[in-house]
Length: 183
View 1 (tube, one colour):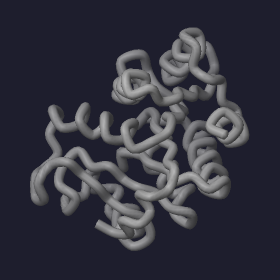
View 2 (cartoon, helix red, strand yellow):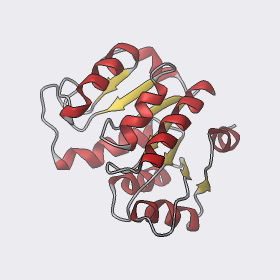
View 3 (cartoon, one colour):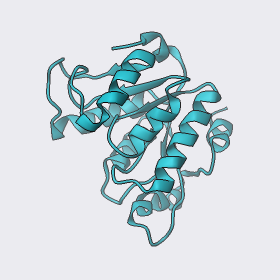
């Protein structure tokens, strides 16, 4: 649904925790806005938290929401207003049939699409067993760049991103870090 011409742009995924911190939400929105301003299409999964913040930040420059259900099924319901804005200003894609409600088994497939259409994945906050880390694993399998925003050692939402940095992900403090690596 939406503006399919956006899918011709170079894309970057911005993903992270559903139960994000205020700082994480603000950072995700800002980096998405700046990445869009740098010419990239921002891709995410329309989940609550970091995904929603990334979509909000990139609405004016282009964002794509990859659904875990049919493109006509709003999930989570709290993002209905954002869904409508993305449908008008961005694009919504899915690999499952229209009308299909989201199911747990669809989300790894959704994450594969998020990383697959992107040149890299920026992870803002992620616990050690999060879906965001599934997306980064798939990104690595697809030879995509992985960018991780460092966080406080005492915050469980930062354990996944800090681990990614220890494993060689690009430490990311601004959109400039991403744009330099991709260019």
